[in-house]
Image 1 (cartoon, one colour):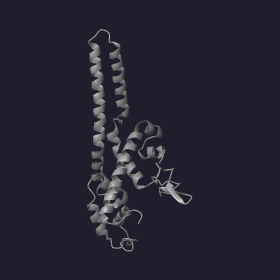
Image 2 (cartoon, helix red, strand yellow; image 1 turned 180 degrees about the vertical axis):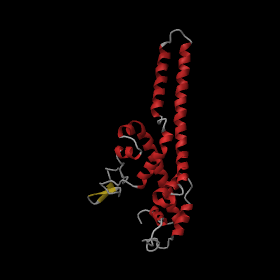
Image 3 (tube, helix red, strand yellow; image 1 turned 90 degrees about the vertical axis):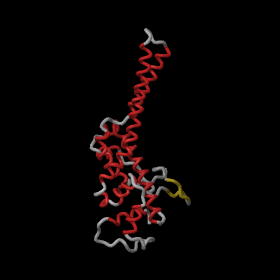
Image 4 (cartoon, rainbow, N blue to C red; image 1 turned 30 degrees about the horizontal axis):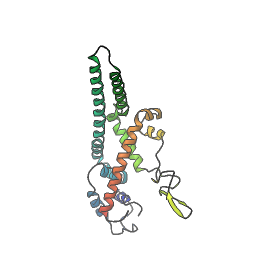
Length: 231
């Protein structure tokens, strides 16, 4: 078996019996697989497993996935907001100090420049104000990208290439087995043009992709453990 998560596909409705002769785990039934899924910790990782590998099961759980994604995003938005507010407060304090004197000295002018630069940097690090409005489209695009792996053309998803008689990590994909899809395709997936995606939405998309991909992989490892077979 190449990936135990593929077992979840057996829970989808089908006219073909897939619960016999599955190469290496013939004793596993659909009930076993569903039971193993129950041992995967609740959260965004488990919801992603369902969405990516058991799409029929995701139809009833889309609200759970939405809520799990929102809970993952909320702390990051709060962190950015705190950083922006702290930078504004710091600049305000320096401005107030400068206002006590008729002519600010060199040290105060340096502090003003530093505080302004810190505020500008905090603004640059903040996601767009429309992030919550865009989150459904961003989530759908990211989940689709996770579910439909863009396998590396060099190693064909194997993560390694043969160099002489040895296997070495693929340099094209860095040993990941997959490569990112293009900015153009990501922009299309969220309903924005490529230039807007690059200017505003790329940091959000890439952060969300990294967070959700890690969560899905962690949930996959939990499923492997629960099933009791080797990945």
